[in-house]
Image 1 (cartoon, helix red, strand yellow):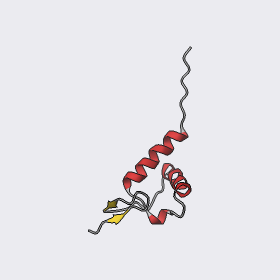
Image 2: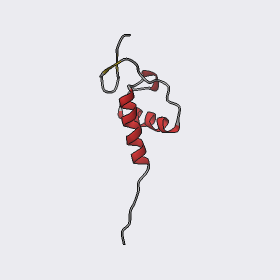
Image 3: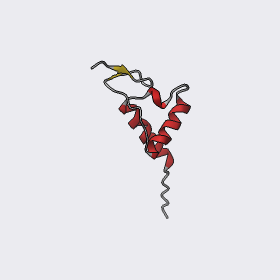
Image 4: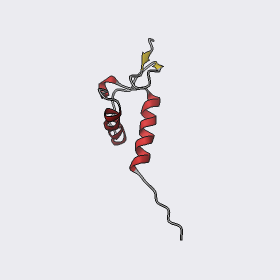
Length: 69
């Protein structure tokens, strides 16, 4: 199996993720398009990059405020 380069991090991987369908992934896709000019979902990305952006977007979507009295 031939390795491919992730278009985001440039690391060599055996496969790229191309089909992102759930809501969390769609938020990540929109952010990736902003962060990486010219990148499209068809370009794919490696799983570590996807996980990194999933976590970043989940953290930025939810803010928890703790009030101590």
